[in-house]
Amino acid sequence: MSVCISRSDNALALRLVTLTQSGLPLVEDPWAWLAEQLGIGVESTLDLLKRLQAEGAIRRIAAVPNHYRLGYRHNGMTVWDVVDTQMPRLGELLGAQPFVSHCYRRPRRPDWPYNLFAMVHGRSREEIDSYRDHLRYLLGDACRADEMLVSSRILKKTGLRLSPSH
Amino acid sequence: MDDFDRRLINRLQRGLPLVRQPWQHVAEELQSRPCEVLDRLHDLLEDGVLTRFGPMFDIEQFGGAFTLAALAVPEARFETVAAQLNALVQVAHNYRREHQWNMWFVLACASATELAATLSRIEALTGLTVLNLPKEHTYHVGLYFPV
Figure 1 (spheres, rainbow over the protein chains, first blue to last red):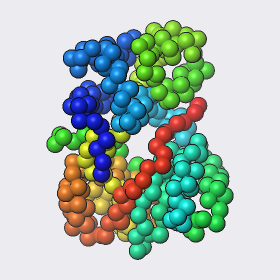
Figure 2: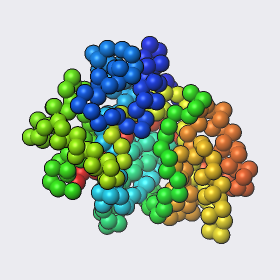
Figure 3: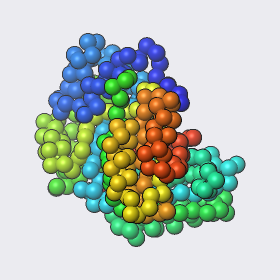
Figure 4: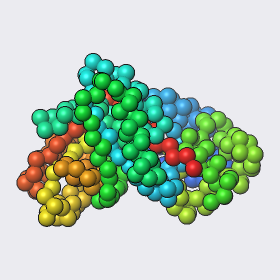
């Protein structure tokens, strides 16, 4: 796997993760708060955030909703066996649909023929079924087989965090 | 939740602008004031409509090794195997899905070595074969739930 953060930012970035993993304080000047914690200036803090966001290490500084509370109780992991040569274009196409939250290429296995994954969310079973139909239409003949694995229970959800060994 | 809350939830899912006065900027967009925006955000977090507000890190860029994996667990053993997996700190998420492969989990490890060891450990603990599906390319990540 690749570590994409530039070396000079890495130590600060790791401290930033530790400081804000559970959230950013709700204060009028959050960058000043961060700057004080990091021991650098406000402008340097803002520049660091901009660099990390440009590199993709920070996707955005945003609100994460409890999607169940907002009515999005249904999710389906749609999986597709897509012709390899068309994968880059089709992966981008599926990922660009507004109802797709995650879209990845993954390896096929002897007992697992699917190489493209797209997670869809909706407020009803009918809604996610219609999303799956739309994705199937977009893929057309390039898709040889597909399934949708519907989640029926959360068994554990702790989120991805930096482990103590970092 | 009123109309202002809904507009705020939609706006803040798309991210705080990286400008010197970000709350002023958001407040102006919503024809409000920064203190009102912050008060409402506080209430939405307190109420649990929002689970978090802050930087959304692509934690994989900070090092570590991750994968999505699945098990086909016999129904009679499902709860036992779920408990065995959930007890492992490396298991970050675990979902039941309606399929022959009925248990889907994400492993988050500090290194590739730890990841391989964890996969072996799960097979030894459960006596089941793990379907290991590490991501090869990311086309899109972006949760957005309009309200």
